[in-house]
Length: 292
Ligand SMILES: NC(=O)c1ccc[n+]([C@@H]2O[C@H](COP(=O)([O-])OP(=O)(O)OC[C@H]3O[C@@H](n4cnc5c(N)ncnc54)[C@H](OP(=O)(O)O)[C@@H]3O)[C@@H](O)[C@H]2O)c1
Image (cartoon, rainbow, N blue to C red; front, side, top):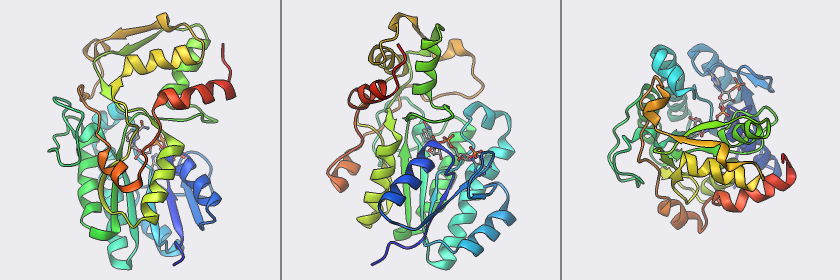
């Protein structure tokens, strides 16, 4: 059966961009939207009328919802915007999908947990600490209500080499290469996840007919500071310029889950593989983009 028309909402981002490339490589018809950055189509996930008009004109069989208001402190400061973009937009897409028999893939986060006793499995209870985490959880529920047509992929610490670098890995490497030091939390745990691997896993899961809630992340849980030192060492940059600090000392607006991270056994069981750990990915990135 043909995989149908795919719509990637958030194709100017890391995950959406990787998805669009992988869809193209597999010969699957796909369209991608942007918001502030230029793309084939532009849409604001927080504007229900524009969203509805887009869905009615494209009539996708599968909507891949990578777009989000991802600035965690920004969400805390502007909860109305977070609610519109991170919950109401995905809920509206889910309602449209329910009425039209379409599938929805939604990207969520381990910020749905409180970080008291991670790493977490899909069966562990959620308890978001921040507005971002709470709105992502509400959106998860809306997508999961689609049953066999809803797929929620929780991911974390996504990285790749971007043209306009926004991700932690690339910014850290570029800042160290520019001679800066980096104060990085040594009490936050998570799973570094390579965006192209996440895109590949998504398409393999869709091809396998997967639905429901799946942790889709790299297999290793580490501290942010350990990830930063690994990045520095792999790129041949001075790891002693990574200063481990407590999350509290950073004075951020939104609380962060500390002992977070996710178990990825469900994903491994479904696919037979999981995204590569950073020690396998970073050496190739460092060779392709030398900074030292
Ligand atoms: N990155 C991580 O470490 C991480 C961790 C856990 C979960 N996630 C989740 O994974 C998903 C993908 O993350 P990512 O790393 O690809 O994010 P990203 O690189 O920051 O991309 C975000 C995308 O959302 C779009 N966007 C932002 N506000 C929008 C709005 N109001 N309406 C429509 N589009 C909007 C952006 O468009 P423009 O750039 O054109 O404005 C961009 O395409 C997100 O749902 C995020 O919550 C990410």
